[in-house]
Structure formats: structure tokens, C-alpha cells
Amino acid sequence: MANHLYDTLFAPHDSSDAPFFYCPGQSTLTYRGFLARAAQFAAAFVDMGLLPGDRVAAQIDKSTDAVAVYVACVRAGLIFLPLNVGYTPTEVSYFLNDSGAKVFLCPDTAQAALSAVAAATDAQLVTLNRDGTGEFADRARTMESVPPVANRGPDDLAAFLYTSGTTGRSKGAMLSHKNLLSNAVLLAKEWHFEPRDVLLHALPIFHTHGLFVAINTAATVGSALIFHEKFDSDALIGDMPQATVMMGVPTFYSRLLDNPDFTSDVSRNMRLFISGSAPMLPETHRQFAKRTGHRILERYGMTETNMSTSNPYNGERKIGTVGPALPGVELKITDPKTGAALPLGDIGVIEVRGDNVFQGYWQMPEKTAAELRADGFFITGDLGHMDADGYVTIVGRDKDLIISGGYNVYPKEVESLIDAQPDVLESAVIGVPDSDLGEVPLALIVAREGITLDLAGLAEAIGSGLARFKQPRQFLQIPALPRNAMGKVQKNVLRDNYARLAETVS
Ligand code: MCA
Ligand code: AMP
Image 1 (spheres, rainbow, N blue to C red):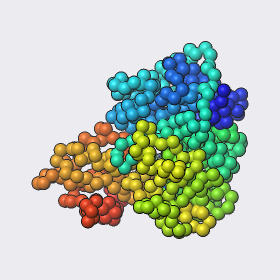
Image 2: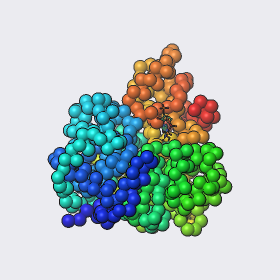
Image 3: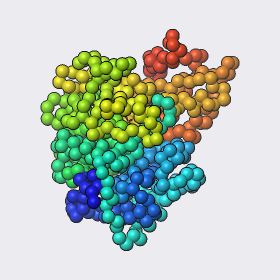
Image 4: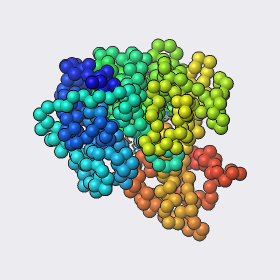
């Protein structure tokens, strides 16, 4: 029996008493203890009748048990589907239906709001709380034996991560055992992870960054994590002297710099700071180096591709670039219209190919074909150029996407909800600069003739079905949307016109 991901990442630590998780205010969890918990959870899933290939959706708070649910899925051959805890029941309903999840985990506190949603799907709802209690934990505790590790090959699926699209409909990116394992092993090597490393972890664990890039990479070599429930600069500063590595989105770094207690002494044991998920301002790079003496290592990835590029551990980390393609990852810059490779230095769409690239979108062959070429290259929708040393600079996006504090907001999804409101003729949602979150959504709305919109009422109406981070920070009524000769809304014009206004309102 072999399980491609589990056998390399987790099984070797089965009887290790090395620390895996330090959670503030709790006792240390060893690899052995953690993997025993994951095995119990796997037993509970099998006991519930789940078979390899079945999907398990989870909208649960960050905890070591939440990680154990993921590892239990890997162990039992199930497909793990983590959901942003900010998603509303309306959003969750879509994911459960689309994925056909057999089990849905949520905390006791969300059960009342979500039981009807789950009941309308094939998913059995069971609760699991941050403190390790709940129906699922109770069931796991009664398991008398653990099932054998499920047989899974490199191409078997390990996770679905939903990512919204330009059409507004979320797509389940199918990630295989090979996708996850190859990237974890690669990153551990490239970033020089060792068993004695301690990774300071404050990211959410329902995305690639906090779950796979951080946890899989650390587990590859048996490193420990200091596991914070969420980002809090004081708490991070308190624990940083015990850590050696940190991963974060740019907002983490700008918030640390805003904290006067963040001094070079705090980072005295740190060997590496890594940033990604959104562009980091050159000014943040510079200020951070000045304050701590550390050069932040910026890397680039996507849900569909895991990590594709990284500035080097040794060697020059070029500010403003995301580094060269990682070993084994092929990257090219192509003409957005023809798909032809462009000469060095020209700006085009970034395409990547390698074991890191996902298997396609769940039950969406047309969307898969539109973005994943038959030759294996994935069209990222990010615009960039490459220098003579292979370093990639991202200059923008060919896709209509707003990245707010590392979370993706697809304007189309928000616009569709606004446009469905009475009195609204049409709308455009744009990203405008925000000093804390990089950018935030702003809604520009055109009303039907002669109508003055009740903007507060409109914000409330769309808010009930939309996660908070996707909700525009401001709604403005404007007379008309600027359009080009083809009739396409000129979002660049809107961004130019409204960029400054937003800084004053957010
Ligand atoms: C929270 N809020 C947000 C965001 N986060 N609004 C917009 N954008 C956000 N990112 C809302 C809250 O619900 C709250 O609303 C209000 O903003 C203020 O919350 P605050 O306490 O300031 O926020 P926070 O809880 O401190 O969170 C900010 C954060 C967090 C720490 C930047 O968003 C975060 O951890 N982001 C990381 C995202 C991430 O991991 N991305 C990786 C994706 P109200 O006031 O109404 O209650 S993976 C990826 O992109 C690829 C693969 C890659 O390359 O890594
Ligand atoms: P997601 O769909 O959540 O996986 O977000 C992936 C997107 O985040 C990419 O397509 C990029 O637009 C963006 N991204 C990730 N890392 C970086 C980075 N270092 N610099 C600029 N953009 C980034």
C-alpha cells in the first residue's frame, strides 16, 4: 500500500516526539500526538462510510484539529475542501452543492445557520470546535482501531480549493497528491528548511498559503510551528524571538512595521521572512530591511499552481520581482492574444507548467480548457516580464481581480449581486489602493433613470450573501460607466478617477 503524499510528508514522523505545534496558552503537540489524532479522525471518516475520492468540506476555525482534518483526509484518501470562515451560508451552499461533499464540518456556533444549507445537499453536517470538542471529535474518540493508510497514487486528488473566476462562478481547483508533494519538497529544499526550524504561523489555513505552503513545507522536514489563531502584531512580536521563519501576506509586514515594538532585537533568531499572495511595495521591502536587517524573500504562486517562482535563499533577492521560476517549473511570458512566447523583457501573460500545476476545475471542462493548455501550460492571467537572469516582475493582471489583504475578490461576483437589486441599471466594482490591505473594493453604480439610490440599503442587501472581505468599502452612484469603442467598461479609467477618493474613505 502506498499513499503518495502521506508516506513522504507525514508517515516518517509517526513516532517522533519532536514538537509540531506550539499553540499559545496550550501544551505542545508533538508529531506523534498530532498524527495519532489525524488517524483517529481518519477512522471516524471511514466509520461514517466515506470512501477514497469522497469530498469533505470544512468551514472550521483555525486549530490543530482543523489541520488534523486535512491530514486525516490525506490518510483516508479523501478530498479535503477547506472553506473561508467568512463565507456566508449562501456561499457555503454553492460549494457543498458543486463539490458533492459527503461530510461538512462546522463549529457548534454555526450549526443553526448551516444545518438547512447542508440538509439541502448530500452532505452530512458534523460539528468540530476550535477547542477540540464537537460531534466529530466525540465520534473519533470512540474509534477502537485506525484503518490502514489509504492507497493513493500521485495523480489522485487530495484537495479542492475553490477560486472565483471572471464569470463570478467559483471553480474547484483540483489538486493532486503530486501537486502538493512536489511543491512541499521543493520549497523545503529551496528555503533551507531543517528540523530545528520554528515557523511563525498566523495565516488562515483555508488557502494554499497558510495550509500547503506553510504546513506541508514545515512537515516535509519535521519543523515546528508556532500556531496563532490569526494575525495580531503584538502577539507575533511576542513569539518572534522563539521563531526562525515567518510566512505572510504583505499586510502582515506593513502592520509589523507600524508597530513600534517591532525592533531588530525581536527578529534576532529569525533566518527567513517570506512574503506572497499579493504584491509587496518596494517601500515595505526597504523599510523592513532597514528596521531588521532582513531582506524579505518574495515568491509568487496561485491556488492552481502552488508556488511557481521564488527569489533565491542565497543570491540576489531583487526587490519588485518575484524571483526566477522554481527548479522543475517551466515559465514563459506569452502574448495574451496569440499565446506565442514573447521576447525577453516584453510584457505578457505568465504561463507555467510542471508538477505544481493543478488537474483542472472540478466538473468544468470548458473553463479548464480555457486556462490549461493541452501541452500542460497554465495561463495564470497575471501580466509580467522576465529579465536576463530569469527574474519575473509582475506588472498587473489580465484578469479582473482585486486582492485585498491577500484575499481574492472577483468583481463580477459582486457586480452580479448589485445589478440584481431593484433600481440598479449597472455597476462596476474596482480595486482602489489601501495602505493596510493593498487594495479594497469600491462599487460604482448607475441607477435606472431618475432614481436616487439608497446606497446604505443596497450595501445591506448584498452584504447578507457575501463574505465581509468581498463587500465594497464604499458605494457611489455615478451617472454612467465609461466605455470604449467596443462597449467594454473601462475599469482603468474608473481606477484612475477614484483611486484617491478611496484612500480618504477606507
Ligand atoms: C478581514 N477583513 C478584510 C480582510 N480581512 N477585508 C478586506 N480584506 C481582507 N483581507 C474585514 C474583517 O472582516 C473586518 O470587517 C474588517 O475587515 C477589519 O478586520 P481586521 O481585524 O483589520 O482584519 P484582520 O482580521 O486583521 O485580517 C486582515 C488580514 C487577513 C490579517 C490581512 O485578511 C489575513 O490574514 N489575510 C491573509 C489572506 C491569505 O492567507 N491569503 C492567501 C491566499 P468588520 O470590521 O466588518 O468586522 S493563497 C494565495 O493567494 C496564493 C496561493 C499565494 O500566492 O499565496
Ligand atoms: P489565489 O487565486 O488566491 O491563489 O491568488 C493568486 C494570485 O495572487 C496570483 O494570480 C497573483 O495575482 C497574486 N500573487 C501571489 N503572489 C504574488 C506576489 N508575490 N506578487 C504579486 N501578486 C501575487
